[in-house]
Image 1 (cartoon, rainbow, N blue to C red):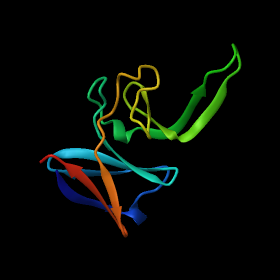
Image 2 (image 1 turned 90 degrees about the vertical axis):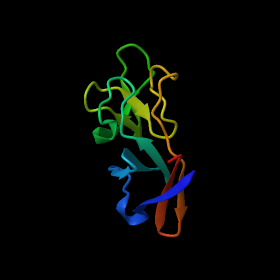
Image 3 (image 1 turned 135 degrees about the vertical axis):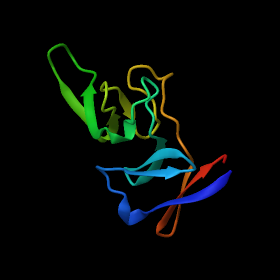
Length: 118
């Protein structure tokens, strides 16, 4: 695997990712609960640019007519059809067999790097 510099840590904020292109692949870099994550900017549902969606929370399982909001800033909602993905695992919230493609990410001082097989 090759290591590619993608960002300075000061460029990454909790509520907004940085979208970069590495060897022709768009990747969204996220900061969630103090950890960095790198996800391919490609929704497995309909090939939407998923990293252009909002970072938000979601409705949690609750009793009928009781709507409980939670997991704020941990969910990525696809801009085309609203599919929601866990930013820590990449899993779709309804079908855990559907997931975003991740890339290993490493912090070295102030710099962030991703690893690709290219």
